[in-house]
Image (tube, rainbow, N blue to C red; front, side, top):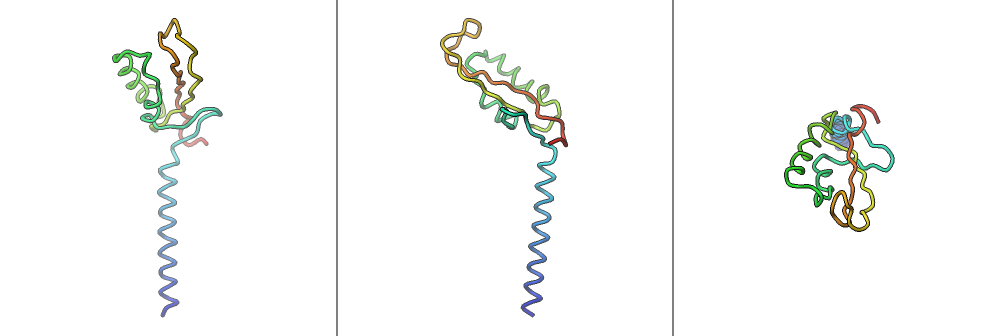
Length: 113
């Protein structure tokens, strides 16, 4: 009797493990990676790391909108992020000191690793 109970518990755990693995694979499958030197982040995480000091409020709103609608072309909610060293001193074009330039691009097409 005890042996049958243990077998039933083991089978239940195996089925649970398989269904969790399948669910995790289904969630992770559409998201592909980034090239060397770039970090895979959600659109929200990418927005959070941008140094916004060099943008006006209107520019920020436009950039945030474009990141989720234009840059995330495959629509999976992820972007590739690369941050460069802070600028040294005041840049004549951007007008801020020590700002961090952030490069953003879409991750590879769905289904590719």
